[in-house]
Length: 426
Image (cartoon, rainbow, N blue to C red; front, top):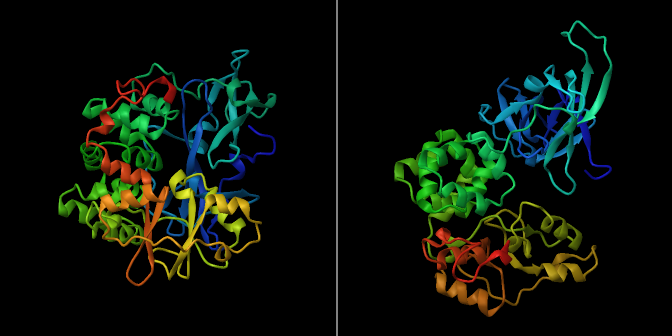
C-alpha cells in the first residue's frame, strides 16, 4: 500500500449517508461486501450495502464510489435500485467479520475482531481489508477487559481461502489474478455445471468482462442460467456493443424481457445497436466513446483518458461534439488524438486542436470498408456519424478483429499454440 492511500475503519462507515455527485442523498451505508481470496491475499471489498429511502437495501459497487470522506460516501450517480442479495462467495464485513473469534498467526492466541480497516489501492478504485482492530482474551460483548491492538490483515487467520479448494468460491478467488480473456478460457474448459456455478459467483463487472471474451454459445448458456434480474445487471455492465451481440443470439421474447429489465438509458443504447446490421459500422460500434464539448481543455481530456475502465483503443482519442455530449450527440466537430493532447498545454481548448480532416463513417458502412479505413489511416478507433452530423459511437480495432477472425479463434491456446504465439506473450 502506498503511503497516504485512504484508510477507513468500517465502524465509521456504518450509517453514513451516500450522496450522488449533485449532492442528493441516495441512502445510508448498512454494510460492506467482501470476497475472500487465495494465496494469503487480503479480502477485497466488492461494494457497499446501501439502504435507500424506501428501506430497500441495494448493492453499490466500489467501482462506482468516487469518494469516502469524513461522514459521507460519494458515488458516480449510477445506482442500481434492485434489492441486494448476498451471493455464496460474498461476506458481510459488519455482519460476519466483527465480533468473530480468530487466531493471531504468530502466537496462536484467540482474539475478537472489534473493527476492520479498509484501504484503497494506489491509482485504482479497488479497496482491500488492510488491518484488524482486535481484543485479546475470551468473553462476549459484556467483557471489555483485555488488551486491544491493531494488527495487519496477515497477522490474523481465518480470512483467506486455500488454493487447493475445489468449490466455486475458491475458483473465483483464483481467477481474480487472471485477465478476463484467461478467465474466459478457463471457464470454457470447465464442465457446463461448474461453468455456470463459477460464473454465477463472479461479481457483475467481472462477469461482464469475462462474458465479452467467451464464445457465443458459452455466453448464451451462462446468461440463460442466471436469474433474469441478475442477467440484466450483467448486461448493463457489459459494453453496449457486446451486450447487443449477446442479446441478438437469444430468442426474441427472452431478448425483449431482458431489455425491459435493464435501466432505460442502457437499454436504449443496446436497442439502437440492435437496429443495425451486424457487420456494419453501426453494428460494430460502441456507444460510449470519450465525448467532450468544444470548451473542454486538454486537462479535461487527459483526465477522461486516464480512466482505468477504458480500453486502450477507446482511450487513444477523444471526440469533440456540440451539446448534448451523450451519443447521439450534437454536431460532430472532429477528433483529438492522445499524442496531440500530450503536446499541448493543459489549458488549451480541445476545439483549437481538433482534427477535422478525416471523414467519419456512416453507420451502414460495411465491415471491409471499416477495416480498410483503420488500416489506411493507422487508426485504432474511428467515429461513426449519422446523416445529421451527430456522433453515434466509435468502432475500435479490437471489435473489428473479433469479426475478422474465425468463429473458433478463442479455442486457440494463446500461450502454447503452434502458430508461433509462445511464452514470450506472457
